[in-house]
Structure formats: structure tokens, C-alpha cells
Image 1 (cartoon, rainbow, N blue to C red):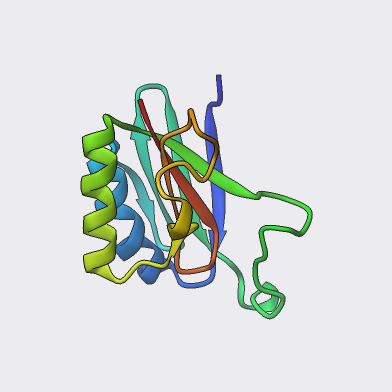
Image 2 (image 1 turned 90 degrees about the horizontal axis):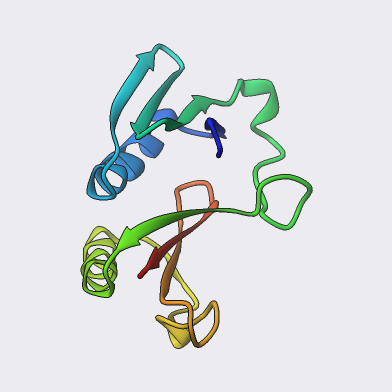
Length: 127
């Protein structure tokens, strides 16, 4: 089982504004906070967000480069996934694969895909 994941972000405040309501909705709670980062925890694992140092911001993120492609979370029932989708639309979040929602991952895979403020792909899977 994964212990934690650490994600470097381009704008810590924007990322917190994006992730806090999402992670709370998915059952996470605030865990740690310091000047250049914060984390949320659920069960025994947690996810950390850290401000990228200025000298590394220029390159930016792309999920097809070496490294992380996307983060996937369990999101509960299909009804909960559908409600999350509505909430994200209201917040103006960039949804991915809308033409294939909710089966963009395959006919037996009910999921919602969207991007965080840095373009990191997020997947929330329903059961």
C-alpha cells in the first residue's frame, strides 16, 4: 500500500483552492501545513502538495513526460461521481474526455477525468 504521494505545484494557493474541497469530498482531512506546503490524509496514506521552487517553474508540467501521468481516487457511488462532476462544472474545472463520460476508461470503468490548475490529470473512479 502507498504511504504518501508528494506533488510539486506551480501555485500553492491555487492548488489548495482546487484540492481542498475535492479531497474533503473524497473523505480526506487536513493533515499537515507549513509555509511551502500542505497535506491531506485518509486512513494510513496522505497526499502532500509543495510549492515548486522558482528556478524550476519555467519548464512546467506535462503528463506525457517522464514522471507522474495522473492521480486516481476512489470516489464512491456512481451517483457521487455524477454529483462531483456537476460540482466541478460549477467551479469551472477543465473536464477531460467529456464525449466519453463516464466510460472514457472502458465500458466497465465508471470514472470522471479532469485537470488540476497545473494540468495534472485527476481520475475519480466510481463503484
